[in-house]
Image (cartoon, rainbow, N blue to C red; front, side, top):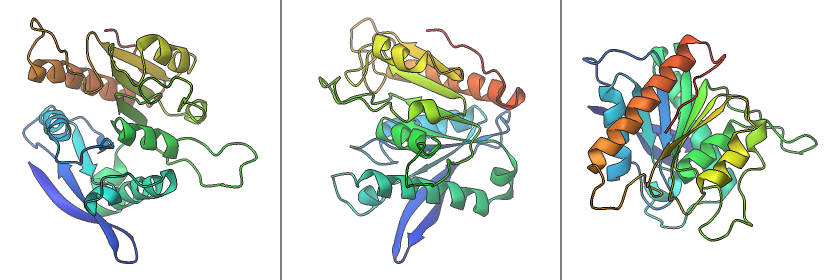
Length: 247
């Protein structure tokens, strides 16, 4: 079950957000905000599956549209506008419900949504004229991190990641053209609070494209179970030492 609310961005601009909660489920005392990927909004099958599935497992989820999606444009906005939108969603979520403000808040998303989440969670670069502080969050969940454009490993998107202090869970398909397991391990393994969970045979949307593959719902369900387990460990340990995930 989802509840719609509006996030004001300033002036007449606003985006739509959806809060997913299942009161019947055993509660995970945290909230996860998920941003969508570049090519599809918050009502895409992937986003709805993960938001509803995680809520059914007791983890409250908030999704939202970036402004360009809300306005029906195909090309994503530039980084600063995407970041400002994500920050506004976090602020609105915390102001809207007391339980969100009182509980650990995690952020993340699919592909671009996860990348933008990681950027707003990164401390400003030393010597930078942009002193915008990092968003204070308990952790990040990145679903298919776009480490580089397909076929362009020279265009890496990792410079900010060492400045993220919160625990990070990266879920990546082993056949993801936006970043192989080896490429991701080279970036994330040196980070003390980062963990990588690999979906063997999965693509950028974690789908396994072979005849013998499990149904997509089963693949997603396994990933959701891992996310809930990891988030629960982060919450219980007060972010001290989240577990290593295997896969």
